[in-house]
Image (cartoon, rainbow, N blue to C red):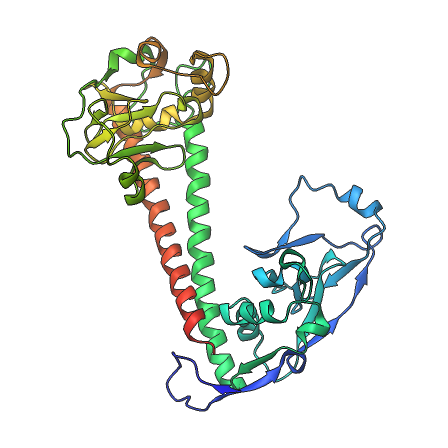
Length: 397
């Protein structure tokens, strides 16, 4: 079996050659004793490969179990035989050894192969399709790829020089993905911290961190004084919007539009750009957002219109804070959480501490900048993930 990939680096024209995976990998079996050896216990996931166990994991309970644990040394590859067909493969690129369940298979790449190329190939669509063909077991959900089976699988590989070139390419993509994901996570942590410090804690009249020039106490006001309700109904032809806990106000997917296309929307509520729509039954979970679009929402939603004394972004962030959500939960009406409801008459009577509109605007602008950076890095991360997926499909045979 020979072959060539669809995309190659310039200067490489030879056919790739077939090799059995037993010629590429060598199984390792190094056992460790968790109760005696100073070594961290890690796990293996399809999404993230080799990952540390969470702090909640009960190590003491597991150590008492009569189970062997294997050492994954620097440069070792580890995979889960039961989930190999899903891509449960990891690589120890660290300078330290870690321990994993003895059920997992550990192996190393033999000389003459580029480790990053091989590790990338192991999770490629081409490799996973081979695992599915050769996996053993009577039921699909119980099919396994033990090393004796893996070693017999035939696959097509290039020579070392081309492997190295491809490996370096994917290493660069992975580095950029990690970089942007790290930056995105950093911005999210910063935002979470600043949401705590730029709003007053319970019982306080001022926040811990403020912009220069603002010294006045925040004032207790009823929400109905600064946020009015928009009650205007749909006229027809407006874009359908929804409010989610994770992403605020979003446009409805085309499939969902089709599902309700025949509905009578005369009872739907108008939303204008800058409004704050919220799900009355999910306000206590954070289903609120400041809208970037004109459109309509379900009658189940409430639409708030900021007055000249209110900044929509400021209040949207304020409403998603944990102590605000707890307050909404207490004020929601209904016998069970499934029927809790926070309509405008109740919300409008609630008192919140708030600063001047000038300070609201500064706080809102700061969080808008953070959101922009989070979106930017997440977008770059998604772009690189899509590029990697495309190249995985086209740079291997």
